[in-house]
Length: 203
Image (tube, rainbow, N blue to C red; front, side, top):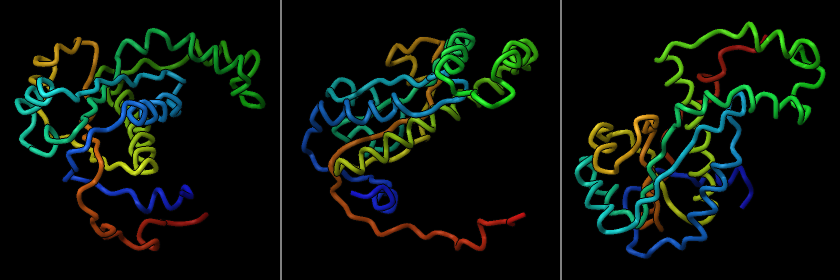
């Protein structure tokens, strides 16, 4: 499928067939997340795959949406706050790979920029990590569509309960739940506002 066709075909799917999703497809979806870009190359995205009956029973305690725990697979998407501890190493990797060539971050400017970077508040850091997690999630949903699978971004869950029942370490923030399966519905394209409303100006 052409990439633009994948984008156009992607829908929020809330009804799935009972068919199991092959592990190979799950790994392809995770690979799309793994190679997604992230700010400062932090790569903070982490995942828990829920596909057992026991796991689905746990999901029932965390979200009021039945299609989440009825899906053959649900991916719990996390952002690892400890990723910040490796920021210097990740930035150095970018520099060594030539990512900053012909920019102020190349050469002597790199050390100066690293020394003068601002310190984020906890709230800003959490927002930054979830922003990066969202990039990976979008890659996942598009790859799933390309594989003939359906997904849905779900933010309606009890983060505290989810972390409790799945024994998720405190360093992780839960970004979203992504149910995955073969679609048992074919919804129309959702309404979209016209281009002249999203393009503010060209200067």
